[in-house]
Every structure is written in structure tokens, then in C-alpha cells.
Amino acid sequence: MTRKLFIPDLTLLASNDKNIIPAELDVKWGEDIKGKSALHVQPTKDEFDVEDEWIIPLVGIDFENGEIEFDALGKNHPPQSNFLGIAFHILDAKTHDVVYFRPFNFMTDDAERKIHAVQYISHPKYRWFNLRQDFPSMYEKPIFPTPDGDEWFHAKIVVQQSIVSVFVNHNPEPSLVITELGDGLGKGLGLWCGPGQGGYFANLKITVF
Image (tube, rainbow, N blue to C red; front, top):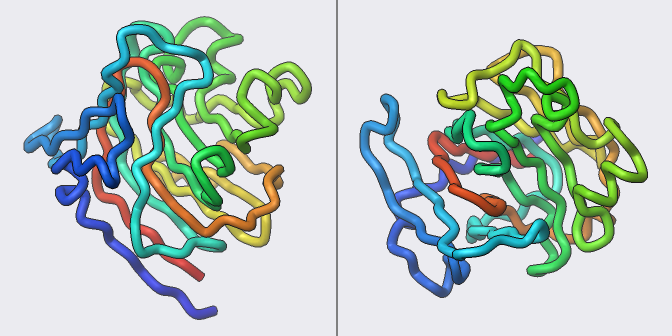
């Protein structure tokens, strides 16, 4: 299997170039963020909708099958405050798949919220609320061992022939395994942020195969 490694320079995204960075999203570079240099993404809307999302495209990478690894940092509190992930198989602004994390749910004592730690969605048809209603607990799962939502966590997303597997903190057992719901026609890739307070990305690398 031929593999090609990409290590995007995240500092280049911190310029807030509006040809790349979507509206209503502020992007900055930070040093020594709990020991890491990282890209901070922060929605700037005053009021949020449950369908809000922002994608920062990673230009020059065609992604069909491969591995995406990165470190992310959110917060334990308050609830509904930070949603961080990766969009892939992007065809356009409305058509893409996403794996994202809800750090505010990682350590909760609420059993229902705890199973909503990592999520797969496929827009435009399969949004999180559709999947939760129609396929409960199939496209979102808890994470074990439980990460601390106030600390950095490592994620690896493996996409191979429509099977998506998500590994957290180097655990050899995946936290989530699903079959893609989208058609996989898009090849775009990007950082993804949902409504709330945003968070940080670091150490991004993509292996295409």
C-alpha cells in the first residue's frame, strides 16, 4: 500500500485569510497552551443554532482513504460549550462527513451525556439529531478510558473503504466504528468546529493511502 504523509503548517491558518477562514470564526496561533503550540478556533456569533458548523479547509490534500491524527483541547464545562473535529470527503459547503468530539461530555456523571462523547455525522442528510433519533447510540459513543475534557487528548481517525474507526489517546481499541453514510465522492479535508467556545488543534498529520 502506497502511503503519502502530509503535515500541514497550522500557523498559516492563523492569518484569518477570509479566502480560507469562514465568516464568524476567529482563528489565532497560541504558544504554550498547556504545553503545546496550537491553533485556536473560536466562533464569534452572539447566538448559536444547533446546526452551526465551521470548516477550515486544508488546501492541497486529496483524501479518500487514510489516517488523520491530531491533538485537541476543549473544556469540561459548561455543557454544550465545545465541539471539535475533522471534516472529510468534503464535496462542498453542504456535503461532507465529520467525526467530532464533545469534551464537555467526557467526564460527566450523566450516563446519557457520557455516550455522546464522539460523534459521526454526514451532511446534508444525516445530522446529529437525525442520527440520535433514528439510530440511537450507533453513530455516537463514550470514550474509554475516559479523557479529561480540560486536557489535551490525541485522536486518530482511520478511513478505509467506507469504514471509519476512531481511536483516542493511543488506545488500540477504537471508541467508534461506523460505515460511512455519505457517498464518499468528495476528497476535501478540513478542521471542523461546532457552536460554542471553540478550542485548540495541534500536531495535525494526515496519511493518505
